[in-house]
Image 1 (cartoon, rainbow, N blue to C red):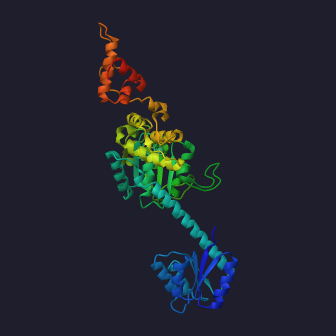
Image 2: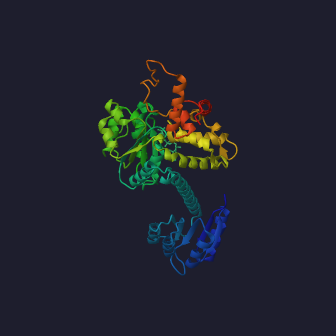
Image 3: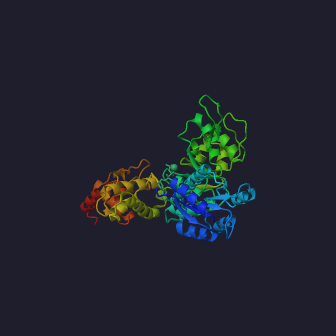
Length: 461
Ligand SMILES: Nc1ncnc2c1ncn2[C@@H]1O[C@H](COP(=O)(O)OP(=O)(O)OP(=O)(O)O)[C@@H](O)[C@H]1O
Ligand SMILES: [Mg+2]
């Protein structure tokens, strides 16, 4: 790690000299200034990590230097050196955001500790700011990719909700449609972004632990409770709590959750003190909650409370126009990750992706791209690298006309020519698919090669 630089500001040469000796001994790099004006100049020139600032300077007071720095938006840790017993200066400098003050004559041990703490706080703060910045860009609303009307509306709603005071939000959608992504985006686009985002998967936590997980417990509340534990609600205060797979919560916990959502205080397990928090709850479910209400597995009142703001994410097969931009996005993503330079898919491979029905939604698409990008050579990915279920065509529902309930074609009482029927069905499939062989093959549940062969055989081209 490069040495940290400390700017020493003092008008007395002897004091500057002795501070410099000490600081260098402690391993810091030192720069010096003897008055306010040169201190401000050195801040620009030397970019110090901390300042020790004497209050009494020839051209201006240390307090003035401090307020000038703040005025310029410079928030370096400053340790103010005051005359013994001048409480007034100390108070004013702390008010201006000085990290600490030290009285003359300087107690070096105290100074060393103060400097170390200030720099450590600064390091932690910088680190937090950096990770926050990364998370903010990782989970910005712009990371929700898509050009369809649906995705555009999702992005709009995310922005609206993020900017609102709404305290509960419900996100529903099949697995892999982006519920996690959207919940994060709402948090990181909101004013709560610098407060915690905690996620808890209601399906993964045993019922017996759920209450203490959410609300915490006091020491000795039950056999294993050896120490006090704060629950998710308490720890997420000011932030967001993401309750994933909320449909899996048992009815007892649902009642407790409802009380908290209605703004009532809660208690830690075994506790007597009421605790109030300000937490935004985002619940998610890939099961149909209304259905769960109908079958009495989910409390209706809780459902209504959560569903004040419902956000429904559609299955990918209902917004296929987003497949190309998602494809492009994930290709770029894995190019960076795997240090490859793949341009995209072959026409044939892309067609397969466009026609597949994606039961695992965007996650399945993402995983498929990851897979082909690991396997593929050259700069265009060929269809043969796609997972077999995609390259063979999926299970796109076919309109049932002309078939009986169980999907078989009815044989007329007088019999028929199989040759004619097959030829006719293939012709129809080609028509329905507007000549797209991949799509036609899928409608007939056969491979493209088989279709090609039959097309030749029946001279349909
Ligand atoms: N619109 C989108 N744009 C870009 N990436 C997306 C989009 N939707 C989902 N993803 C990505 O797809 C993957 C699956 O999304 P996510 O985990 O949010 O789904 P989910 O709905 O929470 O699924 P589950 O119900 O299984 O928990 C993630 O890697 C996510 O980043
Ligand atoms: Mg999820």
